[in-house]
Amino acid sequence: MKAVLFHQHGGIEVLQYAEFPTPEAGPGQVLVRLKAAALNRMDLFNRVGWPGLKLELPHIPGADGAGEVAALGPGEEGWKVGDRVVINSNLGCGKCDFCIAGKDNMCRNWHLLGETVRGTYAQYVVVPEGNLYPIPDGFSERSAAAAGLVFHTAWHSLIQRGNLRPGETVLIIGASGGVNSACIQIAKLSGASVYVVGSGPDKLALAESLGADFLIDRSKDENWSKSVFHLTHREGVDVVVDNVGTTFPQSFRAAKRGGRILTVGNSGGPVFEIDNRYMFSKHLSLLGSTMGTRQDFAKVMDLVFAGKLKPVLDLDFPLQETASAQAYLESGKQMGKVTLSMN
Ligand SMILES: [Zn+2]
Image (cartoon, rainbow, N blue to C red; front, side):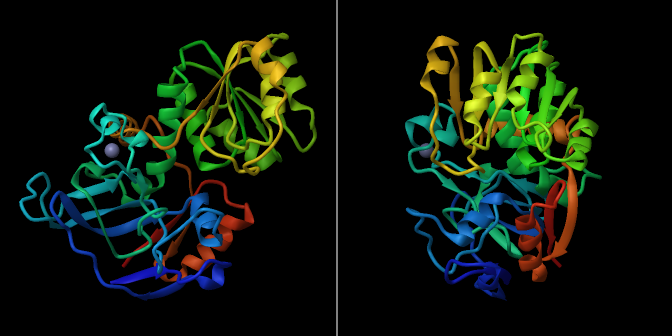
């Protein structure tokens, strides 16, 4: 098969479009012929490399993918060849105490497709049969792939960890990232009022088109937590979605007494200082999570397929031009998901 892979960490020049052996489905597994994949920021971090990351090289990136079932592992009967499917990239072992309790994103032998194992920048990929979800007729593989990781992650964080309730106020730090775009829509669908802090009119216009009620331009308003405080009549918000990390000091100030801070990432860098006085004096809760459970995936993809949640699509590149696709994502100019098409 054709795949995009790298033999060593580095810039986009390490990405090669090359022949790679087509994987075979083992027991409990399915071979998927991919039609679309979507890029995530973690693909860039993994290509560059980070301390503690040990990949089996060459590595094929890519967590998100959709296509059709090409072959079944021995004894596998849950799917038929030709079924159109989207991939849930959270790989639980299915056997440990967390997996058995339905918390497969907390699996003791956890893997993430395209991060710790080879992923979807390829014509084919093998995944456990329980990591597929059917795509209804008329829904494109491209939109399904673009929705997967970001809606899954956002749903688990806001609904399962954050326990978001109708009528609550939610502040989202960042206007255009995939998870943030998903969070805006999920929060609105849940009946919350949504405040977004973003940089620049284009990204804020996107947030508004997704349903954001209050927009704050941080390129003009560095001290945005103060604006949130005023907009909420000196109350603060119930929930802050902060996947930047280095913005925690302002997020703590923007949260209401008893508020929850949700985090699934650290786009601003992993290490920073916090002022603990805000945590205890305001009775704040800090709730982290990564990815979501199989149950979350089914719930959120049903809402995506029903048109109640919509992945935001930006450019599509052929698989051969993955390096250009990653360069575009790295530029930060994208306003939605960057996708790949396989022939
Ligand atoms: Zn497990």
